[in-house]
Length: 101
Image (cartoon, rainbow, N blue to C red; front, side, top):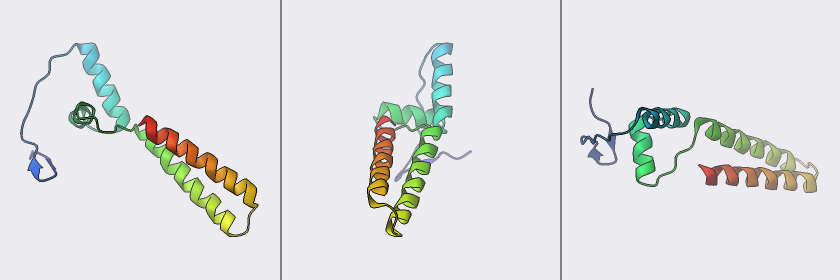
């Protein structure tokens, strides 16, 4: 199986880390929740990159979709005050989820 490539450099180096069985199970569980490999999860955490659980990403996508629909209704002449407030609420929810990821 060929190594993946990230950017211009192939990922051809391996590092072994000793941990307890409980730590490994936790690592595997967190990587699964994010929908990525243990290696990718470890790299993201080690280098301070964002890790977003698949469920959170699905919620973000749905909130964005709903925001687009509300904006469409607003542009078609919907109640201005209500749609603006709904869009603000959706934006706040998206921002909160995005920050937590």
